[in-house]
Length: 193
Image (cartoon, rainbow, N blue to C red; front, side, top):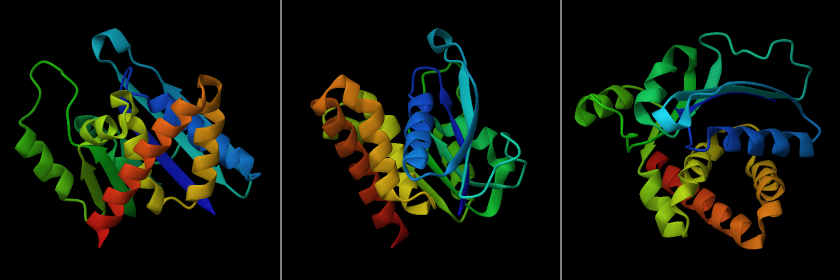
């Protein structure tokens, strides 16, 4: 079992929370985890990315070589495209469709065409689904839910990670994030059928 995942977004979108959920879920199953991250400046819309590697065998390098990621999980569509060279041919590109407010942003239709070039892709309005789940800040968990069917880690481990990370904030916060996760998963399953 091995997952090589690139997480991408903009500062403040919850990329590092996704990484923490995946890492805690993997550790709860006794798996090996290596993670690296680059923090952007959240006040200025700086890019944030993380490599997370999960395996049942020891992992030598924290960084994922180009062409070896089995998933790109992005909360910002333009940031998803930045990491496409890391995606393997069978890998999944899962991204939010709504851009972060960045000046001189590319045309959304052109961006969508680029994202849809990948045979394995899920594009969803994570903000809308997060709001429906009761927490507009849980768009990151919507995107994680949409990616979950394509990860070897498995849904049960990811749910364990969500509980571990969000339980210090109370039961209601766990429930809101679980609802967001489930909305994303449902959309992914519908899009793949």
